[in-house]
Length: 523
Image 1 (cartoon, rainbow, N blue to C red):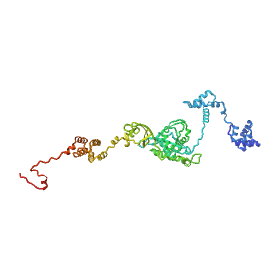
Image 2: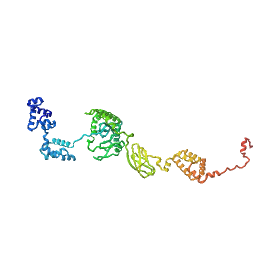
Image 3: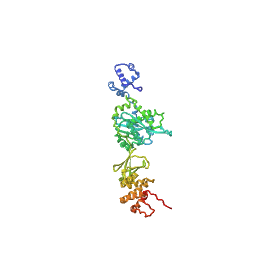
Image 4: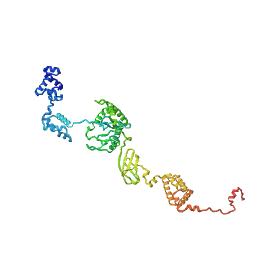
């Protein structure tokens, strides 16, 4: 019975022929087996006291156990000892530095006649696998998206230096259809990771119910079997797209076996096919990856009559949630104090952003994206700015300044000319002449500020006279006008009358010259 096991339906034919009275030689010839095999099975029936009626009524697997009970090694004392020690060996293998070789050496001390190293490892592996086992997971369409990075990297060449730039390969697949997306990004950092994930959802044209990332830092800050700590940006991403974060358990590749298998396939269907190609930027590299992934998704799957793309388009795509109108932007958070100048300082950009002056000294929470910055004080949004990357620059809203600061901020020739025009034509003319001078603008602004103070201090009529006096004498300084007003110089000038010329015979007067007469004098 040590030879090849015969099919049990053939053994049942052997039993029936023997019951019908056929000899061993005839049975062997009819069934195409040797005479010794016929003798061996008949002997087994006789020695084992097996009931042929029962054997013929049983199913083939049950009949087989009557003739082939299995390997007797599993019934030996050596095996029983090893099986009883399995919990201990399983625990010890998790300790630092403990391996199967060390455990086998300890085993041989207790069991000198026990298994050799290869048999020890074989039985240990068989029993550990049997104790754990595995299960087949059933996935609903549109339910989960598995996310990971490949272990190996791809490269492109920097045109200027000739340096090879390594790129991480982002891989994601839908659990139900096994539909795949892959692209190259510069790193596994949060910004690159979420950009790739965003491109993935845009490519699918919809959002699954749950995102299942591996425990990389871009998605999971602290891995935990039951309650992992999710990266804030990853939570923001999921909330934006209306999905749920559901990270795989740490050190449990079986939780994301689909994407792990896709990584292996991508090594063959992307890495290998592009191994001899040269790329000079990440965009051309991603275009080549996209073409390879398209062929991969359109290839018929083994033992299935459809491709991943056919499965996705027919049974899953229409069940994905609709994409939002706006694409996701990463949000960064911070808490800053509003300085005395009414601005908060974002050290990341080395830039200042204004806050309404009433919040000076308060703690402000900020949320900023790639393009915008939002400022909150006591739970209320008090300012919104377009993000600026100008170092040491200021982004200031006029509405955020106090009236005093706003007036100072709005200083310009037009401002002062307009204010003077409201007062009088003389003051308006004086200010216009002041700005026609070739002097530094800040000096002119200060002069105008002084004149504004004078027009508020002195009566309007006196100030108008003083302006007229300054224009006549072409002196336009603040100090001159101040002295004119204090000394009343304009009034004194108006009171002075013209003195009449003295009478004299040689003075002809206005009438003489009007008559056109000519007089010759004798010498």
